[in-house]
Length: 116
Image 1 (cartoon, rainbow, N blue to C red):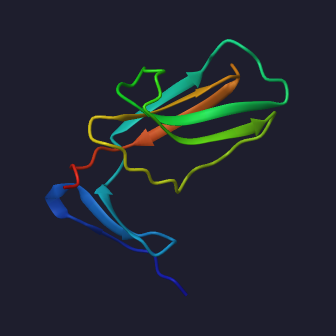
Image 2: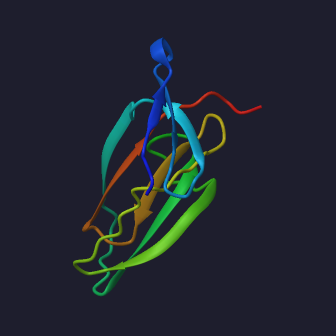
């Protein structure tokens, strides 16, 4: 039997917890940056839509600095990434784009101190 727990850092606003894979995760208590992006790009895919999640230099940049993941999604399907944990380079953003105008995605994240 596993017992789930988290340790709050008092006034620091940070939390430490062990995830389902046994890894220790330390970060802010909750997401502090939530933004809905409708991935509306010209062109419609009838069977599959290609979605790219990538690192970029601004929140609205369509220029890919580094592809984090790329996948296809079929009509009326969804892909949950609830336990996806990414750490990108300092000063970069995680953006997404698609070749189908009917794909919707929420990207949630938080800022962490730069790892040195």
